[in-house]
Image (spheres, rainbow, N blue to C red):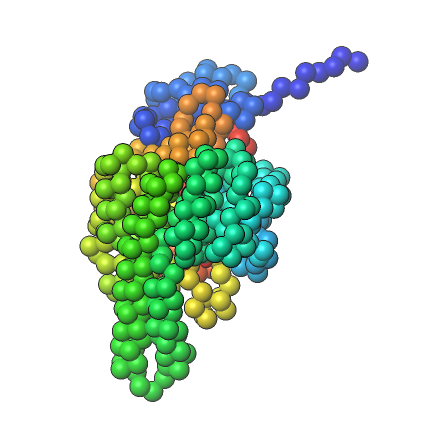
Length: 452
Ligand code: NCD
Ligand code: ZN
């Protein structure tokens, strides 16, 4: 019997608008063996014309929608191991695929804390075995978040662990932070900083606790209680702004002294992003991320003030500064800080919201439709730039790169309902809001992993 050569089926996505950091044109993309085989620019609306490009390929009609490189998220919490009541690998990865993400960087604030290369490798392997997304697992800056011991970083391998972080908190001691950053510098690892002065964050806690207690009491006193709740939250936020501003400066200065690559996570204030701008002007290797919630929403409304998240939503001036930083290149990437919690945990004040499934829509609505960014710029912020920071050969529509692709409708409006999402976390800061821009399909390594 003749041995039949197994040929992998090719796919041609035609009738598409192609957008990446460098491209904004109509065209078609041929996928083969998990990679982008060819990018065709031109009008391939007609099926016959498309078929002539690759007669043996399966056709996928994009119906005029926009095909982009999948998004890359440098800040995600999947809560595995140890907190899978909030999220698990299956729901987290399904949420990533539904949001158009092909790469995620997982934070180490799990149970136990990820403080060994072995645990990180195990989580990565388990997550990637699902075939939905490329996954990088960060390790903590101090062992088990002790705030003291950095011996677990002695021979860290940047190929396996490109990023380390204490996310969820900062490292209180500047001396310990310096030790961690020196080890990162020696091994070529990026230090992602949750910049928040520990003592000031501690000082903010009673205000948040008081707001929560007042909210639970609720009832008779009405407007007066509501105003007291808001006043407590304003006090907390003022302390948390100072905590971010001072810690961002500190972390940049320590990184400068250690000579390490530093990434400022979830920049939320005008002053902290300006510290990044100054450091960049001085030639430092510093990068920064901004989350969709911080560039889309503010604490100026009661609803925004009461959204419990770290860092908190800020003022309209801060929000505008973040948008200008994204525009002028001070902020390099959009990261979601996808932080799922159970409904009960949200009730009792756990900070954070899900974000993977609304990230593109928020960026498209606020940055493209309102602030007049090009969609290419958004693609740079969500794909090409994070790929470059992480040293990944992806994030562009280019032959020989992995076929991690997302098909979006730039003009489709939809109303966010957390309950409809794939994540276990149902609390979204965009609940009930109408956003423009919808993810319709996601391919990972050429395989269709989401169809919406
Ligand atoms: C994050 C979480 O829940 O793990 N919460 C949040 O409010 N952002 C921690 C973090 O990213 O700081
Ligand atoms: Zn954080």
